[in-house]
Image 1 (cartoon, helix red, strand yellow):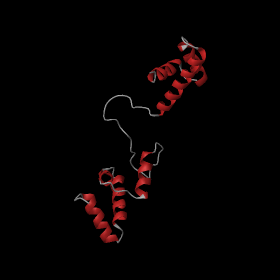
Image 2 (cartoon, helix red, strand yellow):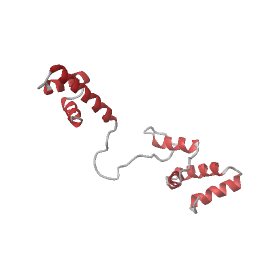
Image 3 (cartoon, rainbow, N blue to C red):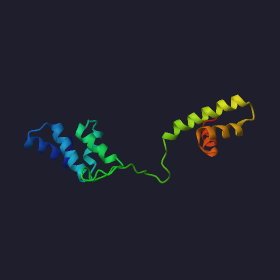
Image 4 (cartoon, rainbow, N blue to C red):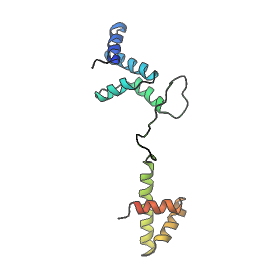
Length: 141
C-alpha cells in the first residue's frame, strides 16, 4: 500500500472497526466512488489487487444505462480521449458473416456477379446494399 489518503483511511477503518484490510479497503473505495472519485479503485487495480464483490457490484451499477438513482449517485461512462465516432465492435462479426455470404453467392453465380450478389445478400439480411458492399469490401483480399 502507498501513502495515499484512501490507504490511510482504509488502515484506520480496519483498526477502528476490527475488519480485515480487504474489507476496509472495499468500504473506502465505495465511499470514494459515492463521492465521484475513482482514484482509490484505479490505484487498487493498478496494484493488481482484486476489489471485493461489493465494489464490483457497485461498479457494475455505475455502468448501467438505467436509472439507479438513490443507489448510485454517479454514472460511469467511457468517453473517448480523441474526437470521432466510437468503434462498434459488434459490427466486426456482422461484417465477417456478410463477407462470407457475399463470397458464397459470387461463387454460386460465377464471375462478374458482384453487384447481383451484393443485392441478394442485402435483401436476405435486411441490410442496405451500402452496408453489405462496405462489409464485403472491408475483408476482400
